[in-house]
Amino acid sequence: MAIAASMGVLAVSLTLHYLSQEKIIGQSNQVTALRRKVDKILSTQKNLINNSNSPQNNRIEYGGTAFLMNTKGYLLTNFHVLEGSDSVYIENSKGKSYKTSLVYSNKAYDLAILKIEDSSFKMISKLPYTFSNQKPKLSEPVFTLGYPREEIVYGQGYLSAVTGYEGDTLNYQVSIPVNPGNSGGPVLDGKGNVLGILSAKQTSADGVAFAIRSTCLFNLAKDPAADSVLHSFLKSTRNQKAANLKGLNHQQLVEKIQDCIFMVKAY
Image (cartoon, rainbow, N blue to C red; front, top):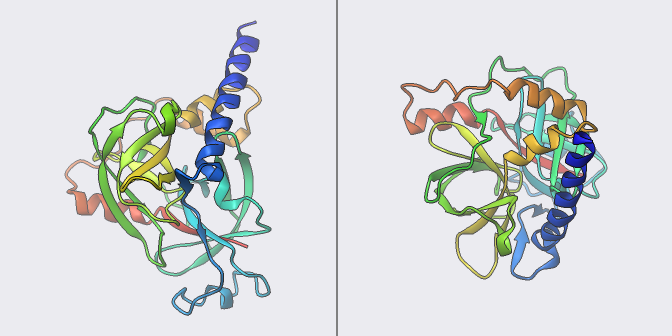
């Protein structure tokens, strides 16, 4: 009965969140998604299309950001970044691209999980950040790293509201400069905790962006029917501690984290 009740609550929250996300991902002229439309391959894109690890006959349609969610090559991004694509590749800050496969998606929460398939990808032993399951405080300083252009871009700001567009309780509002391509990027606090995943910005106000709360991942993972990747995520973060970043200044913190952030190119 408890499981049935919890699944019922989850179903209702999914329905309500789906309706609010529909506004965020393009149904409202007040809010726009942050995926980047790429009409043609530019010469400044590091010739990704000529890379042996990328499709030779397809054109990149959308761009965004993804970041590692564990040490096994799984990445988190927005569903709307990948929607309608046939294949997805990621590229690191050094211009190296890797093929990925979609292992999980949830349109209602606008979340997707990719898995790096290339054996040449070097796995890391420990993430330089953790995922927060706590409610952050209003005005808390935050920063993000993402790919609104062909190189990684840093942005900083603060948590400006504990709810999202029109009071959506599964999003935060952050005052931070973002542009198309930032979709799927992490929002972190100064201690290296991931608070949310950037997804949209308000078109009628400057510097107003929205991030899906990291707590959504924990809620999804608690569903008995959740994908095994989410169950593994929940298990690995149950006893998580703050990221081991003692003694690092902000520049060093960003330097450690940026190697876990990737450009997404959806074909």
